[in-house]
Length: 358
Ligand code: GDD
Ligand code: MG
Image (cartoon, rainbow, N blue to C red):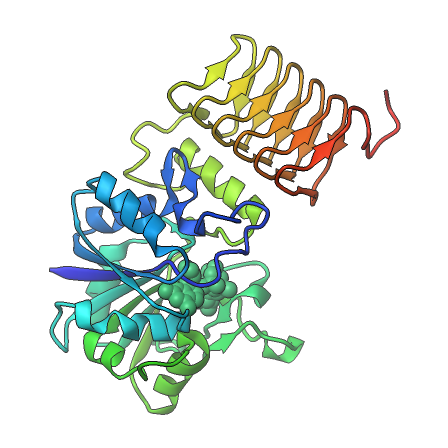
């Protein structure tokens, strides 16, 4: 038996304007809540029991799990106040069935990856590590935990979100999936906020514990920003990011009851939600169109997110845009990368352009 802890708590607001009411891991991605992709991959790798460490709107997880059988035992544990990543891991301690030396997997709840989960556990046991970290190289490591390793794979330091250029000593980062020796989880201080990245890992290194890193160069994405969320969704739909919850990858995914005009063009792994309407001549590329949204005729939507019930007017161009739930963008607008339209906002016809054409 292998157990896994899924960290799905924290603040839940970083995907604004998308997550006003929905915990980030419960946002639908390629047809199911993001968390379901992680659970399905863990199950496929041989995990038999999952503990969800929640803090923000735990009832949304419970209701979903009550209504949907994912074919694996799932326990939901809730912190009354967010305890940080380390505090959350320790807080689920009493729900773990593993013995003191058994491996326990821990996943950040917002990471999409093709990592070989069973291989990670195997490596952890083979070297008899206290903690094994999944690492991945990235172009710009500043937003992550930097993890240098020596030639034997032993972790030599852990620098969370480096502040100065001197601290950027590697491009290999903590990819948000760990294997813990269970007793290490028990040793994390209880009942207070603990950061596994800033406190637990550096502390283990100081005390001489064996922390190893496994570098994997396969698919990896942190869905922490709205546009990364759109990218991850497209990659799941296309099959670039592997998930057993996407049985038939393809150029787009339209959920039941979506209405798509015969001459609309859907590409790049776009996901179209329930009862969404894509009108004649509209083009949707690498985007997420949530339930009930309407893309009017001739509109072009690229690398963007259109919230629940939002309306994009005829001929409007969205590129790298995030449009909140029920917002209304009139016809003939042009919204380019970085723009965020808050829920319910209204933009009149032909009122914003980034170019003077037309
Ligand atoms: N239950 C619970 N309680 N979960 C939490 C809490 C908490 O208080 N705080 C954070 N989490 C969960 C988040 O929901 C997320 O799934 C995960 O822990 C990591 O937190 P983030 O807030 O997303 O951290 P980050 O993306 O800035 O950095 C982390 O991930 C990077 C890789 O994506 C760190 O682990 C970095 O070291 C790492 O490189
Ligand atoms: Mg994150």
